[in-house]
Length: 437
Image 1 (cartoon, rainbow, N blue to C red):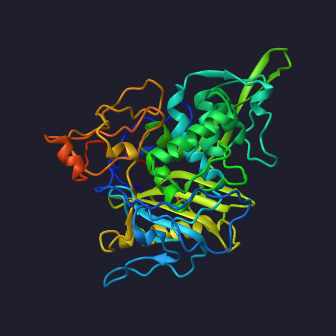
Image 2 (spheres, rainbow, N blue to C red; image 1 turned 90 degrees about the vertical axis):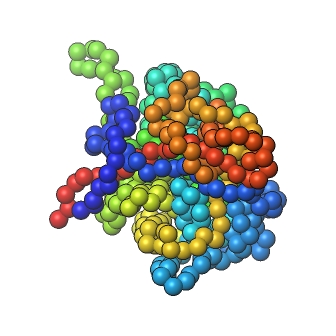
């Protein structure tokens, strides 16, 4: 039986989650660091499939060792050895609180991301529309969805709330929901442009979006490092945290005529396709799991970024394209890396760090940033007045969302590369309370 941690309550999306979801008091305040390493690999050239081996020269954003091919880890006395059965082309284990990269394998290898790209889409677009806003779907909203896409089941002529659409994005990885939201956001082209701009702001410089949903496209790439960075940014939005951690929800169906001739619109249940969150026949719900996003396409293989809390530690793990073809292999390798990370945390010396957004290195960040994940939302009681050392990941289009706790000499502190923040990010705990034999 998976055991729960101790959490303070944060409201979950209304009328969606059947199981009780609690929220941890663990923080996602960010890393203490100086300006990031300057080298970034050139923008990717169009390619449909990744090469068989990582390039010799990769980005060194976050540290020189992260640009080296192969596994990077500082094994020493008391540090557990890495799992021996890892087959992923690329992976990263990072401390979400400090930003330390505990271990990595080909961290900056640019690979097709599949639906993990939806994390960047959500981090970019989520703040644009209030969840209560409604939209009636027209044919053009669904006209250009890729063949074989994952769908939540959106129907032309039906009206959906923004809340419904985001549930479709996060739980069912619905490309139909992504396209509707993109059309609401002035179209696919504009949305992709904003996603790439946001990736650059986050210093996710390996990432190039071509489609908002992660559907295979020439030149669409990201990296395990970037996906970890993007997830960390998204998790600082309350709505993002709640959507990505929702296990099951009700989704509006199609309006039909009843036997009495009345129009009736029933709902149907959807389940999160993140198997560490929902479980499967060959894999259990991971203790402390709280999201984030999975993906699978022909070119990308299986991809996944997850966040979990255990014993007061919050870790992010990204795994891209395991070579082993066993069912749910991406989740199994992620679980093993989580296990290692929780054992190694506090013992292993990091091999790099998650860099802050560009805005965090400038004097423009102001306190009172929006954590609601909604357009026009207000900040909430999740903030702490006690400053912590680090640099926060950015919010969505509304800006960086970093509060600089400055007691004097702002320019001096910036010149020294010191960034003080006072944001704390409650992380939903999705350990489900159910008995196991």
